[in-house]
Length: 367
Image 1: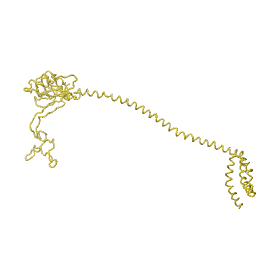
Image 2: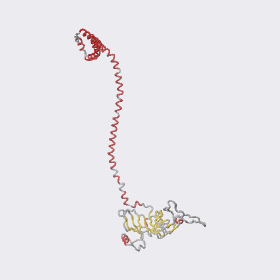
Image 3: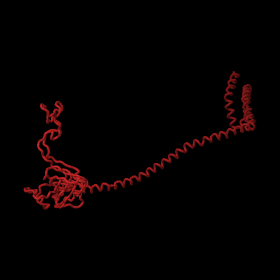
Image 4: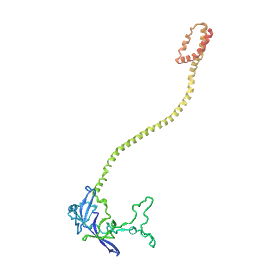
């Protein structure tokens, strides 16, 4: 579907609605419009349709380039050419025509035109300044007044409302309601006023037209964008091997927990065991103490008696040997050597410190 068409203003009148209310209307001759050129995104960088308004009298004088440009569509040179966006999926060829029936009753349209030129105007007419007093003697009536600061910035700021040309500019009136669309006479009736004088050219555009939908090439280019979940599919595949890694970590954690658990359990177990062993040991020595003295007392007595008497006997024998000078009594010591080796070691340890004294006594006696 095309965005709009070219028209020509016929004039204004009034009509009555169903309730009897008066409504100002504007009558516009719209179309038929012929497609002179179809611009594509590949060649021109954007897509649009160049339309020409068919009139009774066409262009009188046209340059050769224009003549060749119109011959492509099979139409004589025209006075006006304008471009409109289109959103039609079907094929549009050069030479196709569009009529006023593209607009429907009740639809809203935007009308673009050149306003009436009113020449050079002052600030009161152009911008609606109130002006000064109108009394006699006032030096300030319709002047613009001060226009800016003197010291800084010492210039007139851009956009300042000053006297100048009024009208003769491009104006757009929006949201005008379509009252009637006559295809036989190529007339379009719109409620309200439109810019320009009667006989001026207008561009009638649909207010509800979506310019994004007018580029089917862009729509096709946008379709693969949502179709790119293919890149997302490998992502979960990469995530799957990551999950077993997390499982391995989880498997290691219980092992560490198991290793940590027996460590506190081991010291807890020996603690109750140790007092049990001590308690069992405590009664045993109590029972063993009365048993040991009964059986071992005579043995200790037998062993201790020779230990006590041996140093005394040794001294007596040594004294006798010193007096007699006969060292022949080692035989008496032989039966003592038959005792266990442990007792001999004990005797030797005890005899060494005591034997030192008799040696000293022997030397004194010899002296």
